[in-house]
Length: 59
Image (cartoon, rainbow, N blue to C red; front, side, top):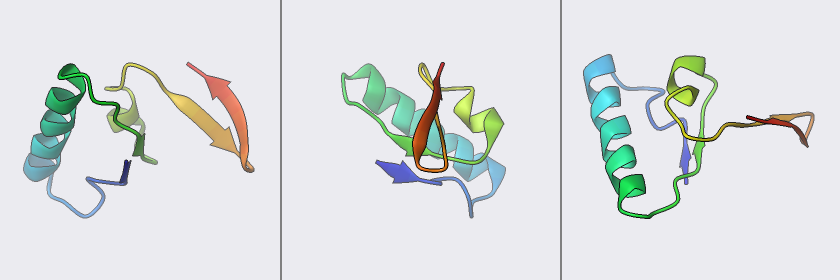
């Protein structure tokens, strides 16, 4: 589980972290990543949105 894992990082380091998470996922690990950055969210295989504590949509 990663809550805003790239939030305080420069773009190069942030991309390295995302690549690491992708590699872990490719090995069969489930990655739960929370972000407010749509560009990061769009890299995921599945996006789940929550609004006001409820599931809003599942893309």
